[in-house]
Length: 94
Image (cartoon, rainbow, N blue to C red; front, side):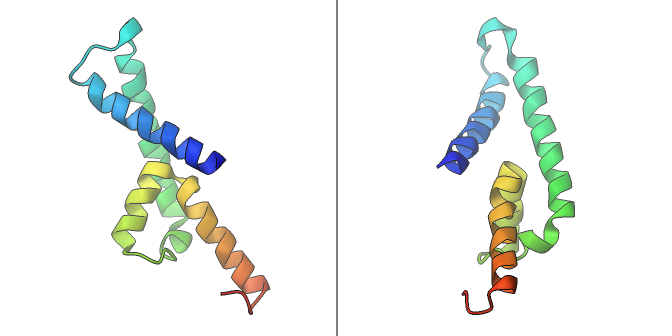
């Protein structure tokens, strides 16, 4: 539930940053929102490099997992890492 909330906030930040390129935001917030979106994407790009072993465990195509990691960062790859740890500790778990 909380994971979904945070993902929604991230999507809202990216959408707001894109909208701010074409529409003036209240309180002249466009530069701040755009900078925040770029910082988030930069941090998530670093996460892609550091957590690639977990990202490639995604059941779908690798490019989708990378895109989801760029958008959501650890909200995407951390459940994959947890599932891998669980599978290692309990071989009977699927």
